[in-house]
Image 1: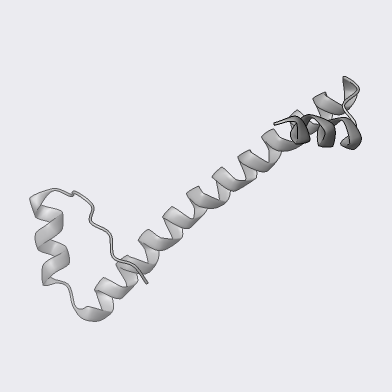
Image 2 (image 1 turned 45 degrees about the horizontal axis):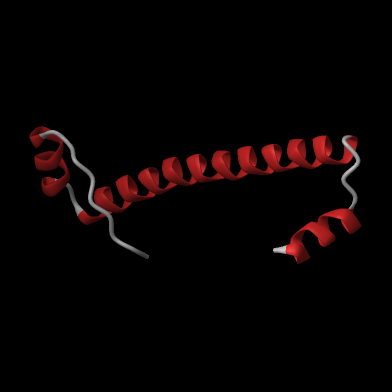
Length: 74
């Protein structure tokens, strides 16, 4: 696990600091789930964009051989 810092209101910070260890772990789990959902959405969006780019390239005649040739020119 890695540690991060987030800004919250003083009231939220006080409530978290006064929470039991079990409550803190629950809060940490909830935050992790929320952030993981965002990562999952970002990955899904990236895959969707890559598929769209691939489809457009294929429809315009780009083949794996042409792509390889272009990449080897660099």
